[in-house]
Image (cartoon, rainbow, N blue to C red; front, side, top):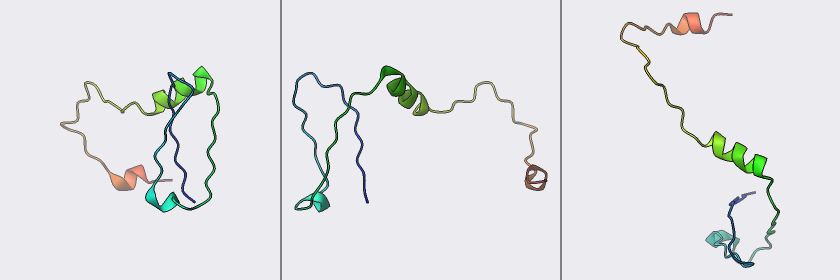
Length: 70
């Protein structure tokens, strides 16, 4: 089962969505719900890229065996 999720802020009471071609002729469900601001903020926070700042790795050596020790 395929899901399409899109979060929009509508300026009017109409929203147009485009569905994949393989949805044509099939029964589909469309849901609309208001999202709380906290949830919207959490989703945006997750999508931020991870950035390493001022990491000095010239002499760093990764030891796979040491990393996997239990």
